[in-house]
Amino acid sequence: MGDTPVFLHLTIGLLIRLAATLYSVYHDATNLVKYTDIDYSVFTDGASYVIRGDSPYRRETYRYTPLLAWVLTPNLTVSPCYGKILFSLFDILTSYLIYSLCLIESAGNKALSRRCSYLWIYNPLPIVICSRGSSESIILSLVLATLFLAKKKATGLAGIVYGFSVHFKLYPIAYCLPLYLCTTQGLDTAKLKHLPLWKNILSITSHRIRLVVGSVLGFFIPTLICYYYYGDEFLQESYYYHLTRKDIRHNFSTYFYMLYLNWNTAGILGTILSILTFAPQVILLITAAVLFRNAGDLCFTIFVQTYCFVIFNKVCTSQYFLWYLSLLPVVYCKLQIKISNALILLFVWYFAQVAWLLPAFFLEFEGRNAFMYVWLESIAFFCANVGILVQIIKNYSP
Image (cartoon, rainbow, N blue to C red):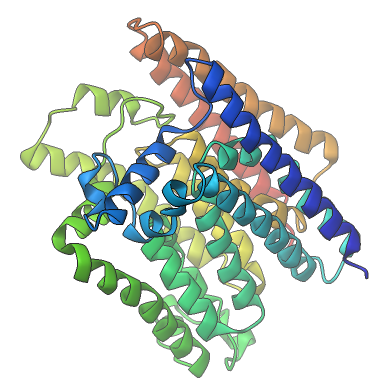
C-alpha cells in the first residue's frame, strides 16, 4: 500500500500522455505544421514494407533495428496511434524504474523517491516527445532496467537487457566499462580501490562472467536474427551509418558548422575529422568510468558518461537530451544542492536552448544565412552544459 501514491501519479501521467496523443491527431488534421515527429512516419513506412514481406530499409532514412518496424506493424492493422500509445507506456515504465532506482539510491526514502519520479512523470519534454511518436522511451527503459537489475545483483539478466539495449541503439555501448567495474560482488572492495585499472579488469568473478556472457547473448541473438533476414543492409543502415553520420540541421552540436563546411569531405581528411570528433568523447567516457568506479556510483557514472557523450557528440538533437535527463532524477537523490541553485541551473539550461532556437528558426524556416549565429549559440549551449555538469559533479555526495 505504501506505493499507492506512485501508481496514482503513474496513472495520471499515462492519461496525460494519451491525451497528448489524441491532441496530435486533431493537430495534424487541422495544421500544416505537424505535431507528429517525422520519424514516426519513417517507422510506419518501414512497418508497411515488413507487412508486404519486404525490407524496412526500402524506406529511405529508416536506420533503426528491424525489430522496431516489426513491433509497429499494428500502426497499419490496428490504429495509426498504436505506436504512440506503446511509446507512452514505455515512458510510464521509465517513470516507475526511476522511482525504483531512487528507492535504492536513497536507502528506501519513499518520499524523496516519489518526488524524483515526479520530475519525469510530469516533465513536458518526455510527454511531448513520446506523444509525437519518438521511440526514445524504449531505450530509456532498457538502460534504466539494466541499472536496476545491476543494483539488485541480477548480473546475468542485467547483461541480457544491456546487450539488447546496445542492439536497439548504439550509444549504451559506452556503459560497458562502468557496468563491469561496478560489478564487485565476490571481490574485496577495500583492496579494489587501490588496484591499478588493468588489475581491476582482470579480477574475474562469476558475477562479472554472467554480466559479460549475458551482454554478448543479449546483443548477438537479436543482431544475428536481423542479419539473417536483411544481411549487410541491416548493418549498414542500423550501425555503420551512425558512425559516419553528419547532420547540419536540428543539431545543437559545436561541430555543426564544421560539418556544414565539410559536408562533402571524404578520403583521409574525412577520416581524420571523424577521429577528431570521437576522440574527446572516448577520453571522457573512459575517465568517468575510472574516476567513479565504486559499485555505489554506478548510476552517477552512467549519468556523467551520458551527459559527456551527448554534449561532445557531433550530432546533438533535443531527443538526445532525454538520454541523460532520464538519469538525472536518480542522481538527484545524492546531490547536496540547494533548490535555488538547482533552479538556476535549470534556467541556464533552458535559456541556452531558447537562445539557440532563435537563429535556428531563421535558418530552417525562413532560409536566412544564419549558420554562423547558430554555431555561436551552439558554443554557448555547450559551455552552459559543461558548467552545469561541473556543478553536478561538485555537489555529488556518494
